[in-house]
Length: 85
Image 1 (cartoon, helix red, strand yellow):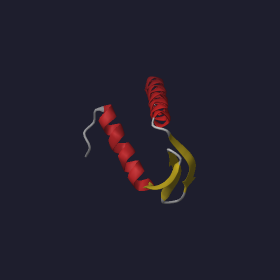
Image 2: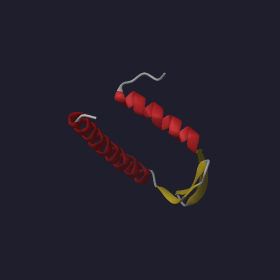
Image 3: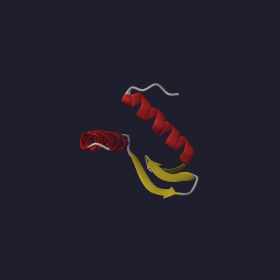
Image 4: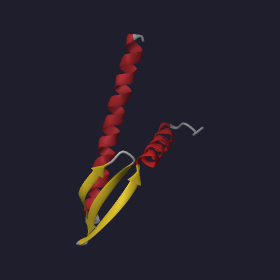
């Protein structure tokens, strides 16, 4: 690859990192505002198990990893202005 291609890629990744960090801060603030506390996260081969607390009550949720990946890919395409295939 040409040096300018690599430099462009680096700058794009830096922008993505900054945007993801900003969005993570927003999500954490919203969780805090709504009184939601993530107690434990367990990553397993096919899913992620999350135990959380809202208003003193404990809950549990399972998120399928393939579905999370598909959602991120769709989100990324929309964010970048591309149309899904």
